[in-house]
Image (cartoon, rainbow, N blue to C red; front, top):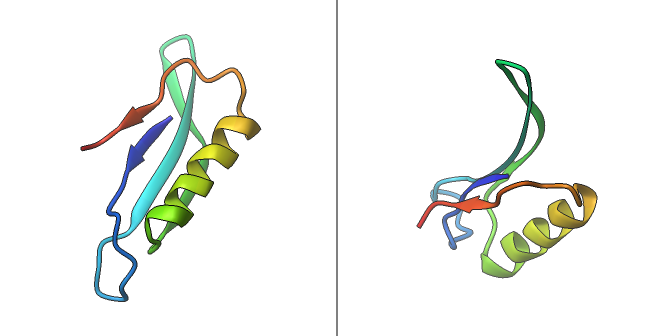
Length: 64
């Protein structure tokens, strides 16, 4: 799981992006993505929902 978060939810702010990646041999695949302008509470809810949806995640990376 890779997350690029903004912690702001205005129309002119950057998007928050959550991505779930998988790999098979040398190939990597984007298998799920959530993208939108959202505040901290909504981003936290999306994070928790994706962790529950993909219980076998190997890593959770969050850009600071």
